[in-house]
Length: 226
Length: 355
Image (cartoon, helix red, strand yellow):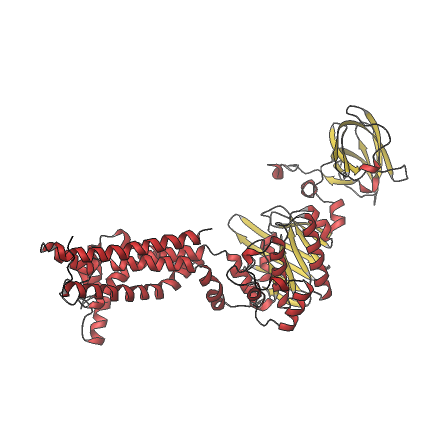
C-alpha cells in the first residue's frame, strides 16, 4: 500500500485538527452548563431543548446542513445579523467547518455529560450545601470532579465525531481547496478523482485518531461505572 | 428544643407532620416511605415546603407565615445522610475542612477527641464503615452546627460499633448543646437512643412521647407491630372509669387495668417481657398452653397459647422456670399488669400494614 503525502493532504490534516480542537472547545464550554442544567433541574421547555439538541443525530447530515445554510445564510435569522455586523458571511469559511463539527458532536457530548452529572448522588450536593457551600462552589468542587471521567469521555467522543464530520461540512463550508477541505472531504476528493494513494494516508490518520479516542473512552467509562 | 410543622405535597405522597420535641435527642421512627427522611431534608432546608414552621432552639429556620426561609447554607445543620456522605475524590483532611468557615482549632480538638488523626491522609474509599461515619460526624460538627441530623446513620454498622459510635455522638452533642434528630426504623436503635420519639405513618405523626413510654404504650396496633410487638389478645371491655378499665380475657379472666379506655372491644398488648417472677399485687395469673420453646443464647423464648392467640415471651435463661416446660403442657404464668396496654380496634385492623 502506497502512502502519498501531498500538499492538499497536509492542509487537510492541519485543518481537521484545528477544526476538531476548536469545535470540541466550544462543545465543552457550552455543553457543560447545559448538561448540568438538564441533569439537575426541571424547567419549562426542557423536553423541547433536549429534542432540538438531539436532532443532528437523527437528521440526515445534508438536512441538518441545509437547515444551517438557511439560518446562517445572508438572509437567515442569524446570518443576516452576522452580515450586518461583520459585512460578510461565515458560510464557506474555515469557521463554517467548526460550526458543522460543533452541531454534529454537541449532542454526543451533552448526552454523555448529562448522564455523568446524573450519576453523581444528590446527597453529595446536599451535604455540600449544608456545610455552607453555595451552588457554584459545589458545582466546581463536587459535581464537576465527580463526573470528570464521564465528561472527558464525552469530550473525546465529540472530538472523534468532529474529526470525521463530512455531510454538514460539505453543505455549509463547501469543498473549497486549501480553505475548507478537511480530511473526510479530501478523502472524498481523492477517491472521486481515483487517486487512491492520496486517500490511503488520510484514511489511516483518520482511523488511528478515531480508534485511539474510542479506546480511551472505553477505558474511562469502565473506570467510571462502579 | 426542635419544633417542626411541615406541609408538602408530592406525587402520591403527602407530608403533613407536626411535632415538638423538648429533648436533646429526637428519634423519628416509622416504616420506610413514611416521611422521616423528607422531614430531615425539610429541617436542613434541602427541600422547599409548601407551608409550615421549623425552629431549632430559639432559631427560626422556616416560617411560611412570616416569609422566613433560610437557605441550607445559612441554617448550619450537621446533615449525615444514609450513604454517600464523604466526598470520595477528597482526602479525609480535605473532607473535614470542606465546610465554610471551619475553625482550625476547633477541628483539631474534634480530631483529637475522636482519635482520627491517623486517617487524615487517607481517602474515603479505604476507610471502614465505622471510620467513614466517624469522619462524616467530625466534618458535620466542624461547622459548629445548630443541630445534628442523622438519617439511619448506623445502618451499615454492626451492633457493638453502632452503640459505641452513638454514645460518642451523643456525648459530644450534649456537651456542646447540639440537639440531635435521628431517623431510624430499627427498634433497638430507637430504644438505645432514648430521648423523644416521633412515630411517623403515611406522612403524618401517629404518636409522640418519650421513647420508652411510646414503646410500651403504642396508640395503634400498627405502631405496636412496627415497634416489634407480637403479642395481641382480643379482649372485651366490661367497664371503665377515669383511670381504670375492667376487661375480660377469654375464656373467663376478668382483670382491672390502670388505663382509661372507651369502647367495647380492644386489643390487649402483652409485651414479650411481661413475665413476672413472683406474685404481687399488680400481677395476673393466666393459663397458657405451651407450644414451643426456643433457646436463643442468653434468652429463653417461650411461645404459648392464650385463648387462641399465640404469644411469645422472652426471659433470661437463668430466670427460666424451675418446672419443666414442654410443648402441649398447660401452665400458669404470672404476668406483670403494668405492662398490659389496651389498643383500640381499628376497622381495617392493620391490614394496610400487612399487605
